[in-house]
Length: 36
Image (tube, rainbow, N blue to C red):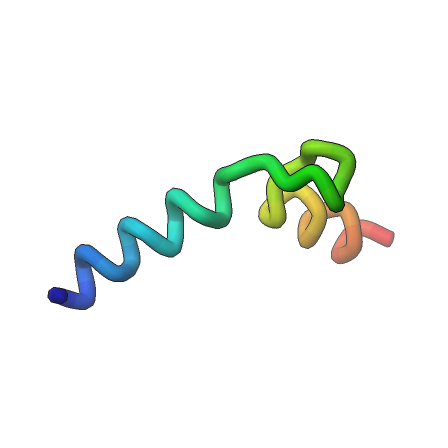
């Protein structure tokens, strides 16, 4: 796989809501933690 393909998959996974985060995305959780 190319790096571009791997980056695309990683971005898709990071935008997927997670049950463990109350259906927030990992990106949203990181932003919340950085603001605190």
